[in-house]
Picture 1 (cartoon, helix red, strand yellow):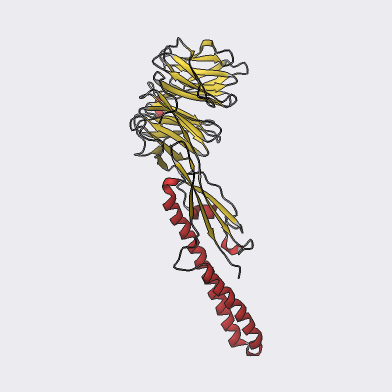
Picture 2 (cartoon, one colour):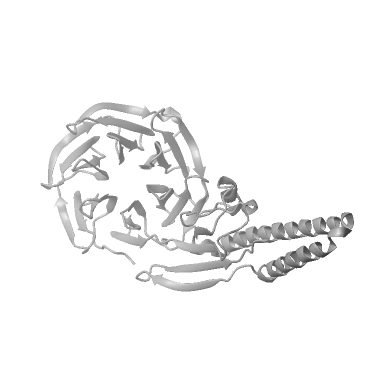
Length: 410
């Protein structure tokens, strides 16, 4: 269900972190709407008289807007609510559509020319240097549309025509044109980066996809589907994303809540040889195999392990977790067998220590029995509890899953 309705062809969204305000460009009415996120109150025509408002970005108390048909970027004083400069930057003959600002540099997607423009913003918030073809059409972009950046110096661009995502190094300008290509992408438009994931809307099929930046795996977020021509997506500071829907003139709002799997050892003293991580926090809907996480954080003796997974991938992740716990069991079993072999050798080689050896056997046998009792080979090694704790206004249900297992020190 939509959160805000009755807009006029809403295009781009931008969120003001300082004032908890959402700004929306409306193409048909030539306006920018201002929405108070906490109350839902809408100032429909906060800025009006615009030609073709599209992309929005905020920098140093100014709101910037791409006016596509006039080939220019407007600068708006957010405090006064007036247009400060209608021709802040002119990039003729190209038609700017969407904006992204990082470290005093504005990046502009120009789909008609298959280029990315780069604009340097000086200390007085003026456009000092304009590179109209920072990324030229020869690079291989195909109708570049949505544009966003991460905290590691990379820019991401959605290619509307061939359903791909391009990745650009903002320092070297090196471009990976087909960084992500997936059949889950269907005329991708707006994007935003949140918690090491890219959220991207697909205009044709009306869905939201999520891309793991590290693994490049694309998943379809079923809790945000069946929208009508979604254009833009943005996130705030409290795990909420907003999507503009051009088809039904609405803004959708969804909570991004992690489904958390908590695994912990009952005993604080566990065997260092197991190399189990102490604590890992992974964003939701990851596709990483647990074994890769183990490899990344090896040689750590833990007493807890936290893993966040997605509700739609819960069973798959639990199976992976089970496999890892089975490996732990096998390792314990091998260690027990090794200790038994050592016992037998000592019995044969040193009959004089028979009495003391029996005591050792008794102690070790007790440990082996305890391990087998707590880690049965043919039974699940986990106590699984599922509780529905967060139904968010009918959007989707978050499940808190608690897994426990026991490891007994030999």
